Length: 226
Ligand code: DC
Image 1 (cartoon, protein in one colour):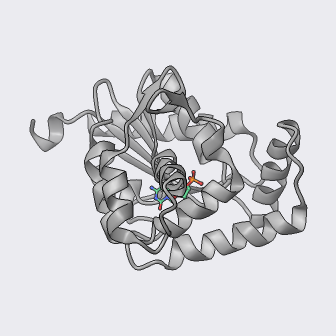
Image 2 (tube, protein in one colour):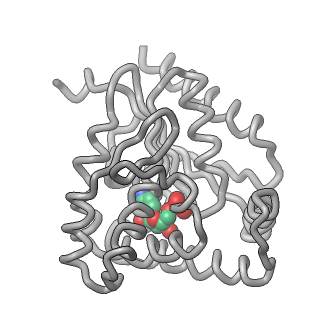
């Protein structure tokens, strides 16, 4: 397949709890595209390795787990073997562990092919930290979706409370700040605004407004190419 005949990709990167997952999934739905939640892959490595008692420092063992874990995505459910782990991987401690093990280039490399496999017709919306910079540098539209730490902590707080999970605002703020720092400062594929990416600050936007903005950018990028 030539570069230009590859299925189109919309890359949506951004910090934790920026709403990029919700926005990316809705943009994919509106366009009938596939959806890649790349953070879920790092979270799956976090869960699978925790169960095997592997330290987040052990890059070679972690990359073996990343390359061989029996995962599948079925109708919105995230499966590890026969088990639906969609909820389990959303735990705060799994997110923190995912951020810790994502610093290792070997782990990141082990997940590249899996991520490329999601690029199928009619197109893909991919969300993460390095979608535009590393995994899909030829994406037709690159969006960096962000929001203030306070807005993100508040959204996460509401999500957790709605799920009946107790949460503490100052712990959430501290955790988000630490995670941002780790994801942005690591040597391998750090979180950053990729060249050519458009920044969308959603602090004051509803989900619908953010989705409409991304769709409108995508439609103009497609019409300017044709
Ligand atoms: O998007 P998320 O919060 O589910 O991601 C969890 C962690 O996984 C995040 O803190 C860093 C890591 N991650 C990454 O390094 N690269 C990606 N493309 C996606 C996630």
